[in-house]
Image (tube, rainbow, N blue to C red; front, side, top):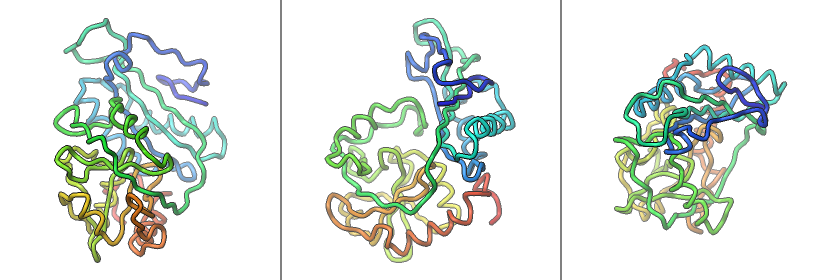
Length: 279
């Protein structure tokens, strides 16, 4: 694997990170995942904007601007040749003495992981309710942070390891998937969980809500089971159709709403840099 480590392309075995990095010791770190399409990083500016906001929330001073990070993606793309890439842009707080720190982190460790990714395609998966409730956010809102224990434990609870897991809040409201945002359709209207449930405000979630009529609504599992169609979204898989929920069948890739949403992605992934662009 090639990585970009604080300005330099390196092989995996060449990267060295301090054992005192507070991203490792205390989980003080954030990241963004996305992919390229013919070399184009879809919604790149939106990911960088959220990354910067997350760094501010944790007191991490990110030294690299948008142009430097965009060039890093190009350098990784060149290192791998013509393959499109899965990208994880990771910012860890950096080394500091053991102990809880209230001072800003001014020397963070920035790593960009990259690996070849298969061509995009329509996809469907089962959705399975997790018995473990969704943890509450680390701050006043959910960050895409290093705090992934809740997600990992939930993944181990799946009866079908190929399924996506569905988190409910402790009150029983639909929250999000293990690595995704959940959308469901009644008639012509799509719905998704409001951020007050603790769901991550996913970049693909924001993109979809920019161009498709979507309402935020609190819902219980029974209401989700009564939907005409369910999908989940994330920044690597775009939208995935749900073929079943806890064994109950759903339209999957044959859903009419899913087809319309995938047409939106078809028209966007190779050229759109931010959801705010006029289409």
